[in-house]
Amino acid sequence: MSTDRATTLAGVKVLDLSRILAGPSSAQLLGDLGADVVKVEKPSEGDDTRKWGPPYVLGRSGEETEESAYYLSANRNKRSIAVDITSASGQELVHSLIAKADVLIENYKVGGLSRYGLAYEQLRTRYPRLVYCSVTGFGQTGPYASRPGYDFLIQGMGGIMSLTGEPQGEPMKVGVGIADIMTGMYAAVGILAALRHRDRTGEGQHIDISLLDTQISWLANAGTNYLTDGALPIRLGNGHPNIVPYQVFPTEDAPMILAVGNDSQFRRFCEVAGVAHLSSDERYATNPMRVRHRMDLCALVESALQKKTRAHWLRELDAAGVPCGPVNNLEDVFSDPHVKARGAELHMPCEWAAEGEVRLLANPLRMSATPPSYQRPPPRLNEHEAEVLTDWLGNRATN
Image: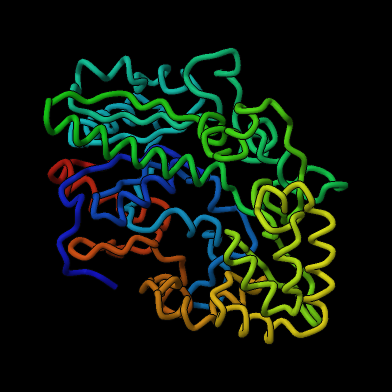
């Protein structure tokens, strides 16, 4: 664990009033970069995801705790304090914390915090330097603004499900809450930009970020393809709409990914696979032609690859500079020597966990001067009430 390096956001105080995944993942990223993140939770209940299991973390005596693996995924480098914001005393306490905060992150329904005097318009004059980030399903404006937003719904409404799945199968969501995660990443970028602006001008601002806006933005080339020619894309399974061959193929014993990105790679693939004649065939010699003749070419590639094992092809194609790889399950991923060397799995000391630690996914940023630091495991509910009140408010009595 990195505990002694200066971090980029040291001195930045973040008040995290969000729950589930998008907001908390954004706050966790800021915490990884050195911000002091205080997670404000409902008394007795806490973040909804604490109960989103199994699996749950085992405690010191071997019993299941109330902390799920899902909750662990987005809540390290935070301190937890339980506050009833529906009460006058709770609202007063939150105001005291806001007065010390640089950033507030919330994901209540549009207008939900106004009843407690905590909406941006109610705070902007009193706290002009505050960067206030609202994470919602559909944004602060528009006909859907009042609707609750969930990742699955957003993947459907935002178009990504129409692109995902087998051609004759049903539309398919991505296997993780990718709309939530990407929204959290964009929120963190927006917060960093707003802090930069605030430091130059003294002016805070409101960040309105929604799952739907974000999900549409990362339709990327598929979205731009549609905007360019107006043609609705079809689901291609593991195929690529603009590059061929670029998909999963069976081999003699196991599936593999072939990711041919240009014509020279295709020629090298054909030589290794014993089908050199295909690279000189006018139907397949260039990528635009390969896209047009996708079905015929992929059948020929599949036939060639099924003659030998995946290990053979990975070895020979890699040596020839042809991008390829296995389709790993998670056991394969975390046992991979490269993944181990890069430190993708993080072991954080944790006093309340059975093994004295929790296993988490590491931050992928590699920064030479100010790398991410891992100071705190995900907190128990209200674990840091006295500590936060002392650090932020100077020994103020608990609420």
